[in-house]
Image (cartoon, rainbow, N blue to C red; front, top):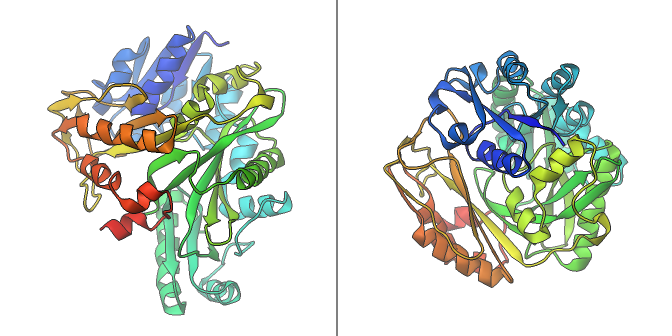
Length: 445
């Protein structure tokens, strides 16, 4: 195992990775921007290096500064967390070329799955179900109109290089397509440096279900169950739970087998997630994308499968066997994660500010992965995620009850936050029934 690890990230995920590193006796090194100097992940690391100003392009995406920090502190490995440089194939290659270990999938796998059109085609060739859609980028608006007519409306217009729910729009007819195509293409060029657009069938009522995979050091790919991610705003997740209340044992077998095939198709190593859309009317599911990194929602899988996914990532990167028996994986109990964001609970608009009160809930089956404490300031430079509230129970009902109590106990004053939304959701009949889809939040508003 490594003796030292640099965490190339910030906030709750940096703090969470540092926690596992220190438990394993690994010296944890943090990098931070000037704006984050007082956050817990910086003070809890064994060593911390400022890599630039608040602007993430000059700090958390500053490859030269991060590699210099790794060299100066004697780091043996780099864990990128999620976001920032985590799915940057060039960074992964540079880390490896520098003689450091990269705690993530290989650069080739990141490249293969980073382009949605290429990923769709690879998955189709591997026998993974994909939704009807284009096999090449729609070169111009006329090509998009032709493709949409063949696929059938409504369609989803998506940035080929996008991710995280960004760079997509729905078109119900040709007029809407003409508007959405220009909008998505312009956004993709600005945000991703790649204006390629694909057209896919849009399912008005659908569930978002994903599978956690882990490519082991010996080359084997295993699946650690599924997560339900259908509670979303603006195509971005707010709640995740495992197991999915929509997935039967038979459907789970199909999901997991498809996810393993997806990983095997790109010789996947380390942690990744195969995201799918599930049509609840037919139980058909379709490949959406693969996230070649650790997911925000990984704690629910950790609870249900009894593993520490960050430890497993480190073991794979170090060439070690997993701590669990790959042939004896089985879910136990139920877990739910709520993303506590600094945002208005009605319109979900960011609301940064100084934190005057921060009192976390506690109790059986309650875990908090937080990035802040009282006295910190939530700045407008980064994602609005404050903390993840994770609860577990023997049953879904028990997990929901614990979530309800924990939300009521969680006190945050200063920045706006979405705790009131979760209090409402946990009393919502549709959510409580387990029979919900990606439209649930819009129906609550």
